[in-house]
Length: 139
Image 1: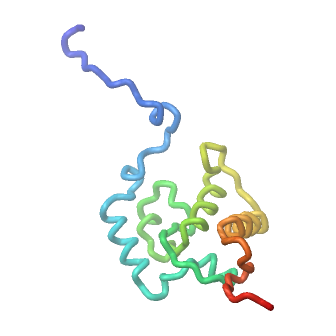
Image 2 (image 1 turned 120 degrees about the vertical axis):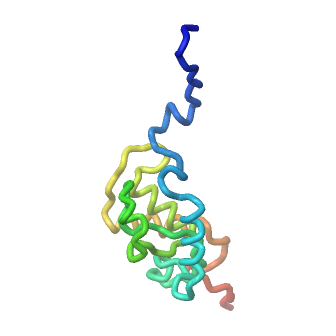
């Protein structure tokens, strides 16, 4: 090998297939984890905002950027752009905005987003549980 030339490791499959930077490079580092835990610990952020809007009470597990920051650091750290979501609602919202699973980004109408939310929550609900989440049985 000629002098002065550096060896470069071959990119792994993930690097070849995904031009998206790692979560850490996108800002989801220790500082973010601390800030998001603090945000979710506030009483007003204990429940998923989307589920509450639909009349459900589900614990929030994720801090979501209401408007995708797309690398804008100011928008990333703007707490007025944060909302508490449960993992299923966050996954549906992210897949809807980003295209999910490597598909092209799609902008869906609000009604389609709501339909996806209902389907996901209905699939996750145990059998014989009414849509309102009540566990009492009717006789």
